[in-house]
Image 1 (cartoon, rainbow, N blue to C red):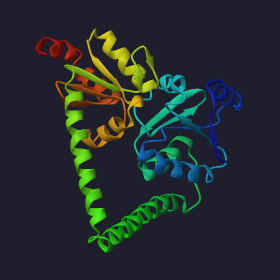
Image 2: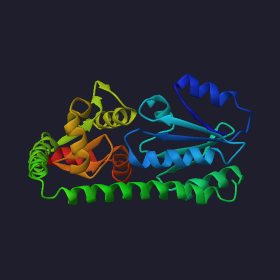
Image 3: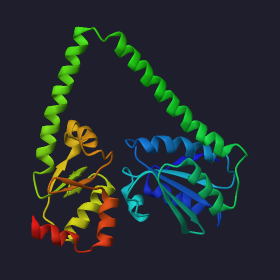
Image 4: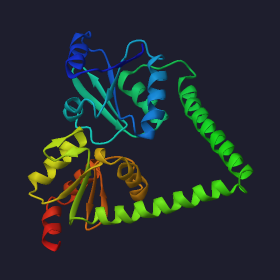
Length: 265
């Protein structure tokens, strides 16, 4: 089998309803900008060649928010195992061995003897390639260390980063509750942002927002600034709380969390 890329909700429904009853289905939810997804997409694609009676589906979580919301996807990479029309297991994270083990456990099938090893080799090779690239970059930088032009470029880059960080510090504290999202509350551009807006409205939280799709410098800079690679991001009093999954966990532990915040802000 190979991975089938889902192109629409109707495409997804047609595929899943046309399969013979009892056919195991593994659904991979991912986004193009999340580095862990890039690694796991390669593993997922490889594993699909090792199992002949399992259907592997790939869903861009942001391009198809209606499917993501159906399976309550709040973070990526995220894998859903379906059999007999029911979700039998969910798996979040970027662990090739864990994904392989989950497939075997849920389906009762085993791949060829070297499937797991090859999956890890794929990731290892990617890591080695990145390491080699970094080493080459470092060598090039060392060779050009006496180049005045490069020194000026580095100084300019450092100055630009400092200015951006100063701007980000102001933005994250622009309102007591600040949401950095894709789109606007009236027109969210991804399922994760839509869900988080819904939570804030349900809790009657007044919040400011910033559409990161309108400013790529903020979009890329905030990932490094917050050490948080995905969006949406929620800040309270200038402090990062996390994304959709973290907010859900907070509310599970303390349903009155936002009431307390609103009182003290």
